[in-house]
Length: 478
Image 1 (cartoon, rainbow, N blue to C red):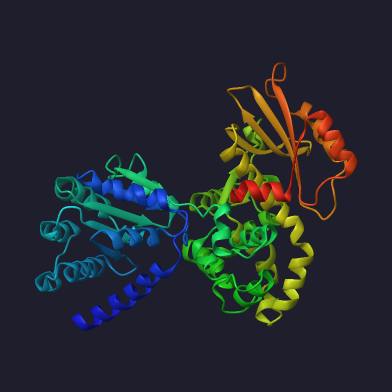
Image 2 (cartoon, rainbow, N blue to C red):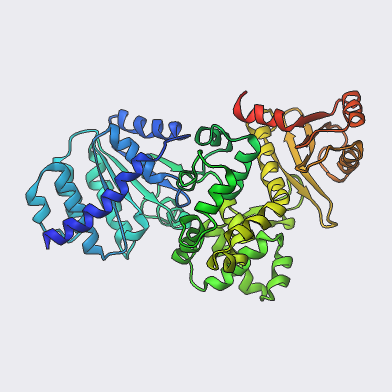
């Protein structure tokens, strides 16, 4: 029995330790927070959660390269089998053969024994904690913390990829663990500005393409090679049967959902531009109550987000797919899987290249909005729309100065003329926000620059204008 268990655990941890080889970027703040929890010289309890593949495991393993600790990856085995798995990992760490052979029946018993043997400052990581959540387990871990770990200078880290389950079961007011954590980290995808570190030879446009198909998901980014151009990376790592990027969206969704056909239909509709409730309902012919239930599940699991106008009514809610990888997959891959299955990846790539500009424009808008919120005094920036169908790419607010900025972003292969600016200025009257005394500013962003007349008029009118090189400089710090 011991040999079988050892083989299973060894294979699992060889796979996990290999993750250390993945490049570690944009996680310095989170790593510093974990170190600070240890340096307090008190008991620490940190919850790390977020979408799969964002580097939660990598973050914990980086900490364990610098601090002593136990790492246990929970799985779908039974309650007792997971306790035994944890014991064996702890026994190996402690060099305690007796622990490896002891049959504890409860988590409280295992932690009571292990904690007595650990030195101050030791880290205990349980990854994929939601796999352990059978009836009564949360109450057990409440007791583990209250009566055992909180008395010691140890750091407990619970990691979970099911966002809704972690928020409901671990972080919510109704959870037995509520109020006990000393810190929490929701790990998001890497920010766009860090893409250049993985692809130093890529142009800004190529980096935007990478972001549009992979988002900032570290595991996906590491599958692309900076030695190949974007097209070759797509053909070798995405548009071929059996490749992780081709299959992972479906794997992740099937792991979380039942009745996947209906969920896939909703996500495909949103990816094709059906973004409000009525549009999705009409597209799929689904009953309102049924659609509401499915949408709430997708929102809870983090596959969808809700968008509201930057200024205006909450009833104008829209839905969007939560990250670019899923958005691209449902827009291009899911409806065209037959091409990949038939070995026609080149043909699908040609279609993607012909139509990608429209999709890239949405990603480019997100980049510009991120610049405004991170590098200017505008507290928030978002899209704006109304029931009539009027839209503005960017409305940003500085509430302290009573200032509003209206922005138009164009990702197209021709220079912008003054007519585009005039249309933006006309739309300002549609946005109801401190209309009597607000200060108004305008921003126009163009991939391909501006006509000479447009540049002259914008200079005269004091309208901010950015070309692609300007955006690139602000993103990269150049």
